[in-house]
Length: 236
Image 1 (cartoon, rainbow, N blue to C red):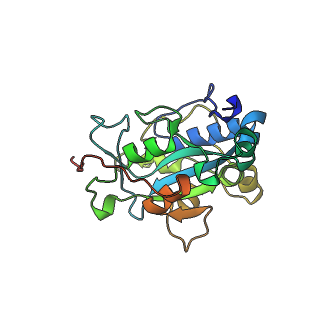
Image 2 (image 1 turned 135 degrees about the horizontal axis):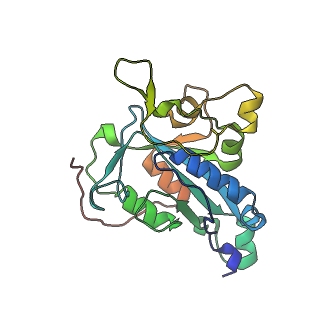
Image 3 (image 1 turned 90 degrees about the vertical axis):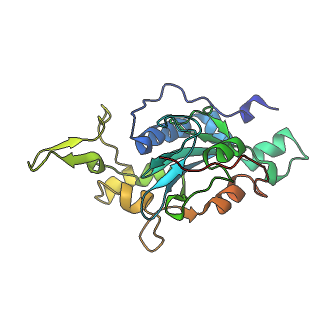
């Protein structure tokens, strides 16, 4: 295999706990600026949430153990998919169904990056007994579109301090300025995180496409995943 077909390392990307959308924005921007990554890989930002913003993910570092899920209001990861022209260069017999896909999740116990199949099976175990209210939906946004249009003023992380008008951050914010993509800035948008990206409502003005878990499996690994895994239950 050509060395360029291996997924790139994350480099020295700033990480701030509880600001996954910004961590992934910076990682996407870094990869988009790298000539090799840009030539070999398509970048997609994946938002994970649902209408009530309660989704269960396994193998997250915030869990008390790898066998227990974390309930996030939303989570964000980056997917890199091997470009078809790279496959043509490395193997004339490789079909488009065998394109390599990798996931970058800064909050997982799994490797970073992690092969698509492993990430899906471990993070969303197929035999997990998940109440409907915790089932995930996925908004897949092309990386370039995300870099251009994402904006957050971090107000979703502010909470009132008792009855006073003072608010505090639920988690310390990043030390760099709030992110506002050039397209969002041009349109006067300063905050669209929840309405345009976390939202799974197709009737709203949003970016990308919303999928359920089955569609996501087919998107990243054509044909789905036919693997037996021990049944797991949500326990809190």
